[in-house]
Length: 137
Image (cartoon, rainbow, N blue to C red; front, side, top):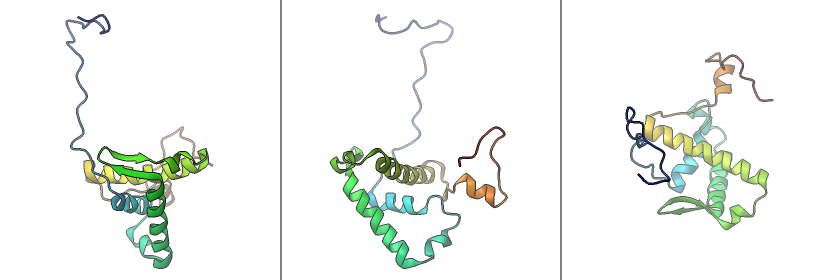
């Protein structure tokens, strides 16, 4: 046994390798923009309100993705323009991208078609947060 490996308990056997969650999710700009627009909305019909503004939002998010993310064979990678952002700009953009990726992963791996924020469920009388969880203010 190599010196850098921890000893294996005879009763336990070697540790199990993590199991993959399935095939990788292929992400492209169009899917990610769709995810960023859709996630968190209470209903799909919300996306149909004020179509001119929604179209502007789609174009704006697509432009931000184009500037800050390069879609490579290894997956999305941040660009030099992203590196120039200050920490608040990075946090805001990363939050939207993360929400979009969460939707794509939920649809792909769990076959969940729609994600919404827990706060909107609580406001409509749905599930409530666990005891001891503080709401953000």
